[in-house]
Amino acid sequence: MTDNREPRHSALIVFVPLLMVALVFHIVRFPDFLNANRPDLLVLLCIFFTTLRRSWFNVEIAWVAGLLLDLLSGAPLGVHALLFAAQVYLIGSQFRNFASYSLWQQTIIIGVINLLANVIGYWLEHVIGQNVYDAPFVIPALLTAVLWPVVYGLCSMLCAIFSVMPEDAQREL
Amino acid sequence: MSKPEQSGLIIHIRFALVVILSIGVMAVDLRSKALNDFRYYLETALYPVLAFADSPHKVSSVFSKQFKSHSELLEENEQLSSQNFEQRAEIMRLRSLETENEDMRRLLNSPSRDAPRRLFAEVLDVDSNPYLHRVVINRGTQAGVKESMPVITDAGLVGQVISTSYSFSRVLLLSDPSSSVPVVNSRTRMRALAVGSGAQDELLINNVPRSADVREGDLLLTSGLGGVYPSGYPVAVVSSIGFSESQPFALIKARPMVDIDKMRYVLLLWYQNPAENDDPKQNIAPKEPTDSKVALRQQRIKDLIESMSKPDAAMGTETLDIDPASVKKKEKTKEAAHD
Image (cartoon, rainbow over all chains, first blue to last red; front, side, top):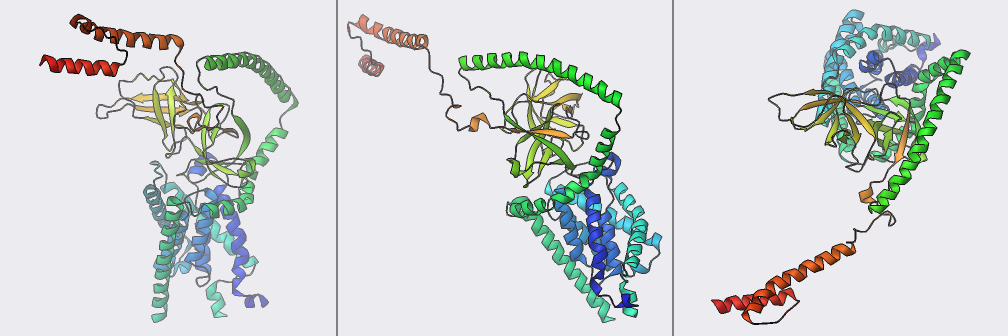
């Protein structure tokens, strides 16, 4: 019962370590296939916390997370930041009841939005002048979508363990 | 009803702000050097994350080392020592060739090439962005690494240092689309540019006319032009040559000598472009003409004057003026008199 009166920032307990894990996941070396088609774990994390805490988690935090990834991966500053913010924004503004959708619907939405973000990223890199013509964007989006149920389950479990309540549940109490 | 609408508006505005901020940051990062210091410190602070990300690779390599059997090690040791022996013999030969080369260069009055200072480094991380062909190495400004230093392995050229932090630096690989290396064909001495294609095992050799003498298997070496890469390091082997009637140039592809996926250790070179070398010892004065050349030139001038003064002799004037200017003057006055 005391858990219900936890301060709102308690989501940080789960978010910050997971952010570190996701950042490491983005730069760690995998076999060739996964290296080229790496799923966006960090975006999934951002989306999860958007649905969990709409008022607390927002576009700006996704932007900062993207900026950290830009710094780590040596990309031009702002590219991932913009893409992450865009994905969180699209989910937050176009799918207001995202949290109440069933898991497979969420998976499809995330796949489509990630695909869109990859296309925008491809375009951005072209505008900047780093033109790679055979950059994949369908397979990473698919992998990202497939990974969503896993991330969702894992994050929910961690939130339950550290008694981080979803926003709606907190409001009801 | 109005509350969700209001919050919707706020999220639009917030996103618009973030977009503007991103574009601003991108522009500043790409077009100016203002964020370089910021990047330098932040990247240095993020070094532990990079090192941590490399740990699975390290652990696996440690394990594979530990589990090598004794006989395998003995065999490898034997092979390496024989290889070492052969290479020592080779080095002896090369050393004599080097001194010979230096002597000859001195005879020809051209600057001698000293062996550049080298630094050993380990590849920490491959940038995961598919748009970037870069690797991170574990040496930074602390070890004296500077931007645009050439990076090689025992197989050939890898690329150049593109950014540095305190304890690590990023290396732009040959295969990055923004990289181009001046190369020379070792067989025909034809110069060309090897440009990264974005694929790891392919370089494009641009602007080579269709009539050029290029064959599959030709070795491309750095030409030393451009001042970034020292000359003579192997870059790539020509892998395919295509001719299309609609294209003015041949479509030549080459395979880099270095297997970037498997590369683990690299060497950094301290290379200074001879053209920009300020060291007075290295700067060689233009070649002085030899005595015979001076004599030849004097002889020629004499002949010229004689040939000019011959008609004068015929006219009756016997002046033999050595100054060519006055000879010309005289001729002019003569011509005027004729008219």
